[in-house]
Image (cartoon, rainbow, N blue to C red):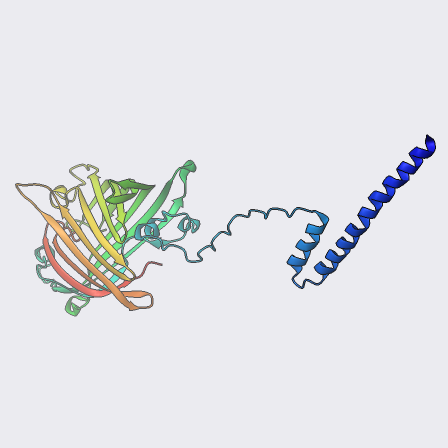
Length: 338
């Protein structure tokens, strides 16, 4: 019985062993075929198939992010003026232009008021032609007040009318207005019915005077509220004010609001180095209506200076002329914003 089982086992081993030899020979032949493949990826795939190894599914990778555009969007007119965007707010405490800084070497007033000066000095003479210039600067005193989108600014503007061609009267300065102000600027970026975007709301205190003694002294103090709007290259500014009352014995110009009103509207468009602006002011009185209009155009001239044309008609061009009609045109140059 044992002999029979041993013989059966040997027979099974011979049978299974004889079937394995041809398989090994076949595998050896396949390996030789793979080694003859030149392409690395195809040769590796051939070896994997012989070994019974399943190829891994290709890894899914996210599409590469598009390269960042190195060009930054140009800040808008009001962003430059009031540092409304994140990038401009990094320039803290820098002195900036406030209103326009310009020099008009020649202006001509078709309705020059002379009676005020001649009543004081009968021998004085006032020319219709004179120079006009304005210096206007501001500095940010406090940024992001208490973590809010509010900034505190101090601004100073000085405008002068210079009788430069009146050599017979020593080319005197006929009028200079000094205007310091403190403004609390709240940054906004709100869509207004799809028409414009609100960019800022300002409240503050404004003082304006001409530094003269009686009877040429003029001055007033105001609480101001300003609103800025933009759309593409167009901008609009609404400036409003409320005069702080003064006692009768100190008030040099008690009727100034009847000529200057309570606000003005500035409209403008800026394209590259070209600027077109319009100011409108009115006292909103039907019985004794008075107002003013100022048109201005600036255009490229040289590297840091633009050509500048200004036309003013109405009341309130300067404090000394707040109650006198002015009709003036001037040409000159304006500093670009730095």
